[in-house]
Length: 120
Image 1 (cartoon, rainbow, N blue to C red):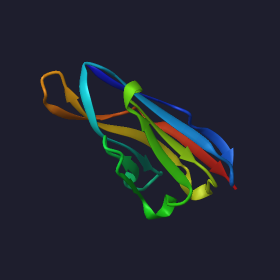
Image 2 (spheres, helix red, strand yellow):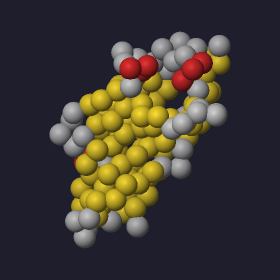
Image 3 (cartoon, rainbow, N blue to C red):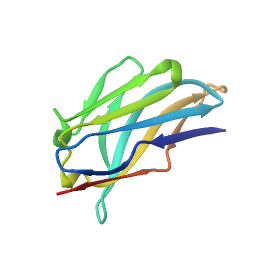
């Protein structure tokens, strides 16, 4: 089995910062792309940021310059540092990982979601 466990969400005032973490555990051979998505009430889930195992990074235009994604391959963990938060960043944030199991097959896994609320 594989699990993605997220932490770090919460309530913050506009202009504040939060750091999200997501740790993968279980029968893992390797992890390809890891990323963060978010879903606000009444909206579709959208990509926030993603990072490959080689370190290539992609950001949504709405978070460029404010959010930073990073990963620690030794710990199978991905982070999202969120600065200059805005009320429109309020959403449930989900961790995603493309994980190569010990069978060498690749599976797509999601975390349980963590709420981020930014007050104005």
